Amino acid sequence: MGIYDRDYIHSDYRGPGTPQMRLMLPRMTPAVKWLLIINIAVFVPAYLIPALDNFLTVWFSVYPSTLLRALQPWRLISYQFLHAGVMHVLFNMLILYFFGPLLERLWGTRRFAVFYLVCGAMGGLVYPLLVLSNVLRPLPLIGASGAIFGMLAAGAVLFPGLRVFFMGIFPMSLRTLAILLAVLSLLKFAGDHNRGGEAAHLAGMAAGIAYDLGRPWLEARAMQQKKGAWQRRIQNERQFQAEVDRILDKVHASGVNSLTRSEKSILREATQREQQERR
Image 1 (cartoon, rainbow, N blue to C red):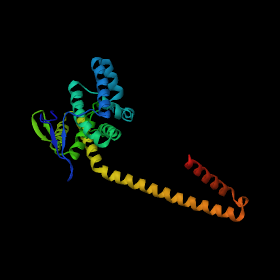
Image 2: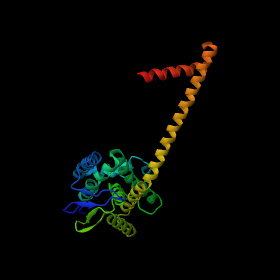
Image 3: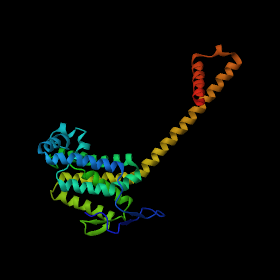
Image 4: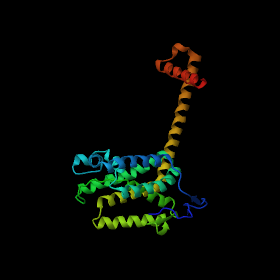
């Protein structure tokens, strides 16, 4: 799949008043760089040493051949860094290289890395459920495709007009490409071709779309929680200061010896706070 046309890409941001974007080959971003390095560093020795490849597949793929293996949590992350062949890893890493920096610059390194791994993990969660439901046979599931498809789906929601080339030939928008890939995955799943992998693709895409559509609500909720916590803190400070004033009035009227143990403790805390503010 070709990513950009030779005159680069003009993409339309979502929403009115937002500027157009003009991209050349993307500059590497931190999370994308390390994801590329780890994937390649794992793939090359495994490709050259079959015994190592077999070991990694048995212990680090999503392999729900038994209930114990299905419940081993590290596999949800580790399987994303294993690949079945050169074209498999090449396709995934090319998409990551071209589209990853777009999302990482938009969201920041930490949020992008979490998003990427969660989309991949969703594929790793859905596959064992289908196996345990007797929909699929238990075979090793490997590859970053769930994360990659999630990334493409998120990009299609955020930048629907981004121009890409499918198969290096057919120009289309990123939104059209995402829809096409989803349809192809559904057809392959229905046709009993790589059903586990296609299920992971679709689960990753669903996670990517859900994140994009749910992110404004999550951010608003987080902001509301922060606002509520700040208001509670202000209210607590006011109550504390009112109690300190009451205690000081009591000292003025009746002397220090009239204070209870609790009142003395509050007065010491107020003194400590004042000293810390002066430092």
